Image 1: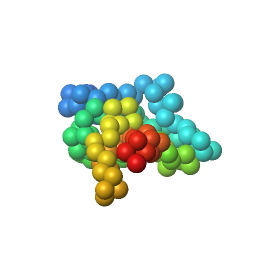
Image 2: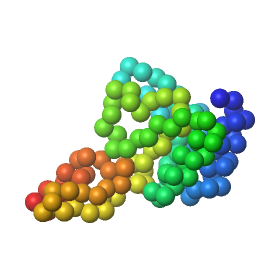
Image 3: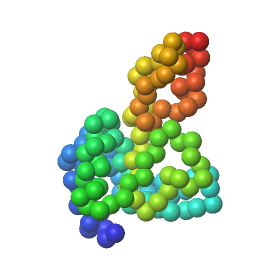
Image 4: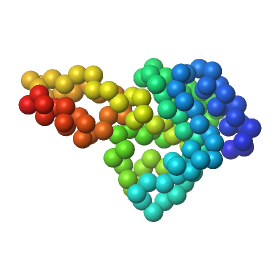
Length: 126
């Protein structure tokens, strides 16, 4: 994708969401690797602040024909979160545990909740 096209998409996202949009070389380099042997720089990184922003981001990316790679709790280390795409990193802001129900053994969490955090919170409730 050409830099000009990426700038247009980033501008539109910045206008539509409160979250952060980064297409600078450093941010892209930070998200180009994981614990695997792969190294694939993304087109950019978006840190949504609200769950509703995910719909907006997907709509903008879809109209532009830009692939999206979601990142949640960070447990995938074998290249699953890498790609020449727009990375949606939900761990920064969308990391709240909304509800834990010990009776039904179910939890409602945002997509960036790390499993260890959920286990610790569930453990406190038995």
